[in-house]
Length: 249
Length: 317
Ligand SMILES: Cc1cc2nc3c(=O)[nH]c(=O)nc-3n(C[C@H](O)[C@H](O)[C@H](O)COP(=O)(O)OP(=O)(O)OC[C@H]3O[C@@H](n4cnc5c(N)ncnc54)[C@H](O)[C@@H]3O)c2cc1C
Ligand SMILES: Nc1ncnc2c1ncn2[C@@H]1O[C@H](COP(=O)(O)O)[C@@H](O)[C@H]1O
Image (cartoon, rainbow over the protein chains, first blue to last red):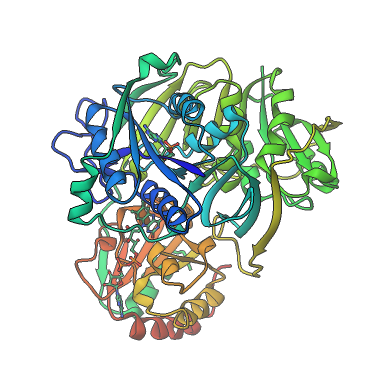
């Protein structure tokens, strides 16, 4: 079995986001970037399946700028076998990423595609479902447990009411939740070894898909700030304030 | 053209967030049709027909729709989509799973999780876990939109009498099977719509200690929330998680106990009307969004809090 994993390079989740003064976006210069967190879970799961002898090859793919190579290298350092960078500049919307990934899937013919459930920059939560749709593959979104069986996957999904379990046939798309597993760290020797693993570069324009933006970003602004609150000195004072000042109890 | 809203329900009752989505959808265009796909879901179609904002209910009923599977819903919606300018549903796990599948097949770039309708093609949505707000304009002919339910009031549920028409089912997918759902039943108000929410974090130290939270929730008729750390540690189940990758809540009162206030947690609760933080670390970031901060050990504070609440003779429900 072959698993394709889509990884996105995003501003690190610990960075305090700053909105640009001209309203065109958020500051990205000199800001720490890393792999979108649930994409690390997607890679980890693929590696675990390979270690269990159920997969032969893991290919990590990203769509983005030249520097997104780092994200693929990191995936290689924790166990992916090969990498692909599809070069595209500026914002590539989920629909366009899905169309690009469709081309990669047609070329690579994986049995499974693992992705994150949501990118923490655009917070779209779309790409996996879109790829599943255009490939006409089943989708298992928000996965917190995956069992590989003969020709099918049994996937536990985190839904609003609790947990749901579905079975999808292979090939299929899985989008991963952070609770799926505990991503490992790349060891130094593995980081060195990853430098020698193949990383193919493709220009998005060569794939023959329309990736121009359909959504115009008119302005990006700071959210309204909450007014500063107060510290209370005792539980009694807290209850009094909630009762008589805020009038919420 | 009209707008089409996909209802969320359990074949018996309409899920609360559908009413919030109805409000948002009718702000886009008041010729609002609602699609109910289900198994023996007549009571659902009927309830929705009574919402004054709704002009028409399309009801597609078949055994294959007992459980909600995006692969089975999508072709039904695509078949109807021709007549609509916008397709809409809630940005909860229901809509998040479903809408992109529809959008991709309509070749539309979806606008996710809007918090405000500016015009029929322009919307406000949070990005970066709510640390920035983007005003975006969709240039696609057909628009696929998911709505953050807590940003819109629920529509009134009675007084209307929309016509209910039958729609056609399509073939089910062979490739996806529903196996089971572990739904945790509770008598408490739902997290997403509760007037008061009390949440516990890693500071609770164990699942057993959550009984301190439960006692207060009982008293205040509150829903119980949690940080991701508390869920990951197994103190409480996943459906209680509040935050960027959990639920968004906007109650009148949010009480955060033993929660540090990571941006991913704030993303799910910082629009609450009144926020209370109980934390023993005076520097915890949660205090920067709290209207009332109590720097204290929660194991002292929670029992006292309950005691004080018990002294009050009137608690709003
Ligand atoms: C991509 C991504 C998505 C995420 N999504 C979410 C999300 O949706 N929701 C979410 O909550 N988190 C989310 N997180 C995790 C988030 O970054 C934090 O790790 C998490 O919110 C921390 O939970 P906590 O505040 O309970 O724990 P901690 O940060 O460990 O804080 C515990 C707090 O309890 C206090 N405390 C300890 N003992 C006591 C005591 N006896 N009395 C009083 N106070 C005490 C401490 O002072 C501390 O402030 C996400 C992370 C990532 C990377
Ligand atoms: N530019 C990209 N390159 C590779 N994978 C991506 C890209 N954008 C999104 N993805 C994948 O799709 C998931 C969901 O992203 P989104 O739909 O933007 O929230 C991510 O977790 C990634 O796995």
